[in-house]
Length: 219
Image (cartoon, rainbow, N blue to C red; front, top):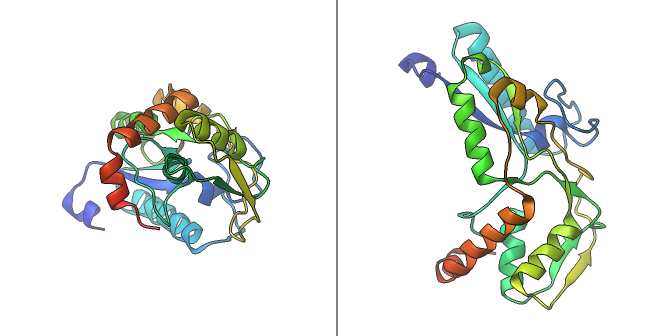
């Protein structure tokens, strides 16, 4: 409402591929699908945000682009009780603790490096033809959680290994893989960061900022 009244040129709505597509959509996930099987309040709020974005675009003519993120990661994200798995894995590994895997470890995610996310957002801001559209800002590749854990342990030289735990009730996704074809054609988006390279850069950031991170992390 405020963006409409104040004449903002374009609004980018930070949405979530995990929420919009739900747990049962065919892979790779494409922008035309929206789940009606809601599992978490977070999922509801992301869907509601997209509906409001559509309303203000269609009714008021507000320029809006819905960008759907997939498991973003990279330097700058601190670990904590309600944070994402990559910073938490790195933190635990650097403390020489086993990495807990909830489920089988065969679950996959589409981890997207922060530089690629920023690139996608800048393109969504600048491209006129993006107005009113939704785009996946993803890597277009899937990685198993157990492979992530082994890579983190290797990069941090953590000897503690992994620890298997029971799947949590809200872990409804067994696989996540976003299609970037629409973003490639409509925005010129091309994710460039190899997952291992991005993970190594994130570990390096942890090593360079360890004192600050340990003073900030809350579990």
